[in-house]
Length: 555
Image 1 (cartoon, rainbow, N blue to C red):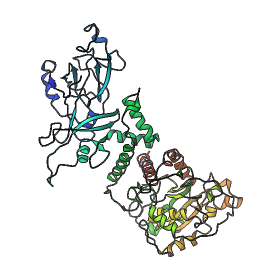
Image 2 (image 1 turned 90 degrees about the vertical axis):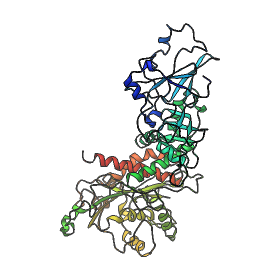
Image 3 (image 1 turned 135 degrees about the vertical axis):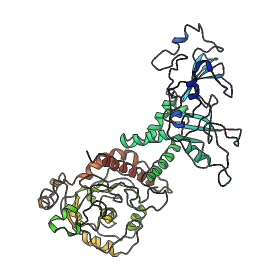
Image 4 (image 1 turned 180 degrees about the vertical axis):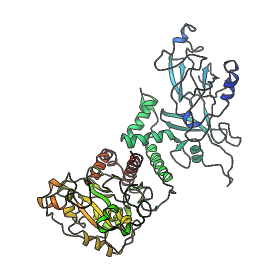
């Protein structure tokens, strides 16, 4: 087939009146765009991977020839389709014979088709062809009909969906909007269920199903973007996948934008710079939140009953979630700056930069790796995180990158990173009557905690993410997790044991460790990323963890 345009001819003899009326109905774009197989319509031979596609033709054709190719192929009912996001599938089938298309529709079944096959007369074999190669045009803005004010020419684009990477001819709507100019190309693609790779004059678009599928694979199976796009290339052509157009770089940028905007949509926030601290995070529904889920008379409780309104939190460092020391994009910044589970990166840098040199604080217990006595590597040696100790929800604003262990750099104030994580993650809980804090090295961290917090308050610095209050932390019961406690000296084993501390119940203090177990597999991807991209990815992963716990917390 070498014709440049496709002529579509309906076949009345093949269609009943009810089927004919259905064939004229609009079929939604995305799911029609992402199909991959043909279905039997009762009028011709059936093509399935498990059956011989030539079987029904061997009786009719004694020998294939250029003028009489042995097997018909399929195309969508209309050569141009435009619908809203995420509906339907490419539906009715059409036969290809002698350079013409004869539509053969089915009343109820919808066919998923993203490509067809064409008989190569010269080499005498079948060649897979995309719909774009066969002359299909995707018309935007008029429900599949051509816009009367658009250009005669089309734009050759690359459309990526879950069944491959395919070229497509796209014609944009030229109707003027309120300002007298046509709707931007990127907006027209979004209306058709396609995410543009760029926003001025896009040449590549990704179906919403690709974005959703990769997001689910990334948070559930820790699939990285390179392997997923390689899978799409092999889906397109498993013999020579390298000949498929490479849109991996564009996919990275597009998916990062997609995940950020969807996170803003789900939290009712307008995408912007300098967002409110923690506004994109999912809070624990069981932890005490003043004015939301607490007893209105909680302030009148007896001292012995304060544990009923206490916040149980755990802090810990993870040295697997590091970042390689390599050349990074200096202009990269997190889209979720301060709005997710990491503390505001600009505030952290300002806090660390304004600290003067302090002498190293030696351990009065064993020499723990968390205190810098172990080997750490990378531009970022790990992260410190904060979570509720009973329900394993990551607390917003409680994540801070580490440099040389949880005491930070020897030339930086000891425990400076952990201090900022504590203030950033717990400042919304400062008015509670009681805190219960779990930390693997609480025996060391609590020695000068009050003095460090006093210095933090009296410095008078203004942080965008923290409203520094001239008050102390609430009454805090400090303990060491039950798993880590046996590694401490005998004097710590009873003083910081969760088995003996009042009001802690059966809390084990190891909730963060279970979070790290899930996050460590993600670290294989994030340690290769630039700093901003890394934080966006971790924020999205931790938000998915919190959302799933909300869904299952009532079980």
